Length: 112
Length: 112
Image 1 (cartoon, rainbow over the protein chains, first blue to last red):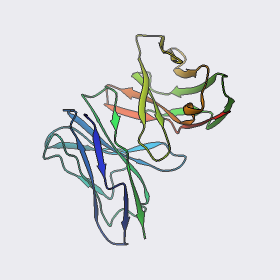
Image 2: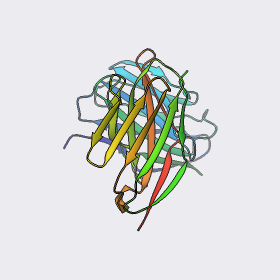
Image 3: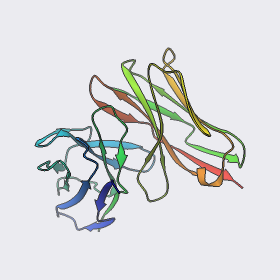
Image 4: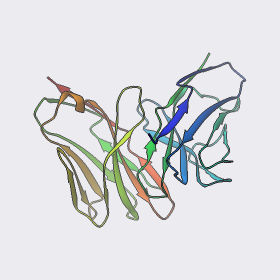
């Protein structure tokens, strides 16, 4: 079955550590996105990529980094510069811009 | 930029009754409006969408209406069932800046 896979489902990070969240899709979608979800704030865009080897900052990119070396993969690194990283992170993909998004099942990151 | 407001934030309805969730958007250039359903611990799932050249769209018990003049759109769920209990998000897409902006969500509870 085609879909979008995020791993791990739960992730714990110590203060000062960088962590990388994985996102893989086999839908042959060109566009991929990372969102952060906090209670009562909806979904906020971190980074997005419309094509391999290209990506743009979203509304809350500070403290995060991404890469898009393969069409299928769009990993997100939460760096130590992100002061409040505890959140639910969602990856999504779409055939192209302006099409319906397919979301992964999310990664819950907790700083300990 | 685009601002999407969603109301109500919580909604409880008796099983079998109808539920209506409303959203307003600020940017008249937005022209694609999807609705997502998110169950606990999962990623959002696209349930219905509408484009700006259409006023209404139905899919079984779910319908979406769009009023471009007033810049608002609504989700209607009829004959509600317990499995409709979830958080629902509206969103507005602006092809000009290629951004999908989400509302803050509505937690719908169906009372058996």
